[in-house]
Amino acid sequence: MTVRLTVAQALIRYLWNQHVRRDGSERRFFGGVFGIFGHGNVAGIGQALQEHPEVPFVPFRNEQAQVHAAVAYARTCRRMGAMACTSSIGPGATNMVTGAAMATVNRLPVLLLPGDLFARRNVAPVLQQLESEATQDVSVNDCFRPVSRYFDRIQRPEQLITSLPEAMRVLTSPAQTGAVTLALPQDVQAEAFDWPEEMFRRRVWVVPRTPPDPALLDLAAAWVRTSRRPLVVAGGGVHHSEAHEALAQFCEATGIPVGETQAGKGALPWDHPCALGGIGVTGGLAANRLAREADLVIGIGTRYSDFTTASKTLFQHPSVRFVNLNVAEFDAFKHAALPVVGDARTALQGLTARLPDWQVDPAFRQEVESLKRQWEAEVERLQAPSGRRPMTQAEVIGILNRTIRPDGVVINAAGSAPGDLHKIWRASHPGQYHVEYGYSTMGYEIPAGLGVRMAAPDREVIVLVGDGTFLMMPTELVTAVQEGIRMTVVLVDNHGFASIGGLSESLGSGGFGTEFRRRAPNGTLSGDRLPIDYVAIARGLGVHGVRAEDGEALAREIEAARERPGTTVIVVECDREARVPGYEAWWDVQVAEVSTMEPVVQARRTWVENARQERHFHGPEGESA
Image (cartoon, rainbow, N blue to C red; front, side):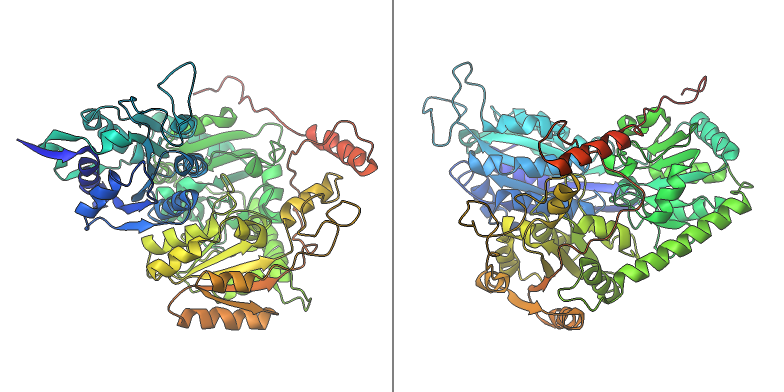
């Protein structure tokens, strides 16, 4: 039996019948479709969505923003749910490329459905077509190929029958997920075909907990037993696999301390005895000091970015070894590690079972406890009311940390806030900390708030955003109004790009081009600060806007925002020079080798000295998996 539908109608019907199951829990995979219509999709996917009102459709203001929201939705769902994003061909499609890269970098599933050129070609060149003298088989959508885990261009209706299962295979893969792009020529979208009825049956994709090789677990346990200063690096895979309880049990059984990456923060509650907080460039004193002398590093669900490893300078023990528990083989082999490839929760449970009578040395445990006490005292100092006007960003973070509800979510992505949050935010539960730092995408924060609220409508959402990133994508406040979404946006006004300003100063460039100032008579950007009224911008976009002059006012406005039905933007001025310090970790940013500027020359000398500490890891002699 067949059913006659257009390609777009068949696509929407298929997607709505896909479900996922893990640990006996089952749910519909797609929560709906985000989109902006243009000539490349309005008569195809747009018409199909009209015929399927049961499929939620949310129109956005910016195509990049809708992918940001979809990524946040998937992260909140622990990759067990996703959104599809549709756009027209042309700038609408290429606007989504940044979001696609972010999804793939962060290993989060999102389905992209950009329109494409006419497959029949006879009316070419069409509006917004990128012409090539060498081939007719190219469009701007080919930009998606390097940033997608799976890419296909549907030139004939029947190709959809084999392409859609492949797309779902990748989207639901624990190891290979990321952006999936199906480019849809606008004429093909509207073309009818006789589809097999069985294509639209309800299908359940089982997301496996792949068990690791027992022999590798045995060897990993042997390495743990011979270690004297072991350390866990908890990455985002702990959250994706819901391995929080297994990690806590492993730590309580062995006493091994834990440092958390940006994606892994909250893997343990902050007050757990083994929780040392952030590790790496944006990490804290306790985790970084222990990392420097660790003889065994157990990476769980981490890809070891340069921020985690401090550009390969953090782990300095001469004989350090790595055991990597990771569902992705590519990440498991990093640093010449013993690669325990498999689901993080399953692997942790297996490793714990092999260490029933082993614990760290009492002296090492006391050292961990002492460092944790020192670090928590430092966090208290940084979060305490400063009495400064304008406030410090650390003080703002402390207020948010104390006032957020237990099940709340704090969202951030770019600027100086991710580093400060990683250091001093105290995550009380696994889903509280939502910072996108794999791609650190400016403009992510407000769209992400929408995605989190759609995935978890009962949870409080606090979006922390700097003025620089706010100006890149404030327009999704309109989408919040449209959808009746309540969230609190705390906008830090530090008069420009404070994070890069600080980095520029450290490299000898004096913050060049990073402040929001008028052009002075001498031609430099050193005039008065720009008179930007963020409260007026918020109100103009339809949400409540207010300014908080001090910490008490900020706390009051957060409470007041909870009582309002919609979104509130609270503007807080912060001192851009009052920064949370670094803690014994370095980040490699290349400095000009020659310069007429003395501060740059000095910065280059410092860079040369630090770069000598960068390491290559080759693994122990005679022991290879």
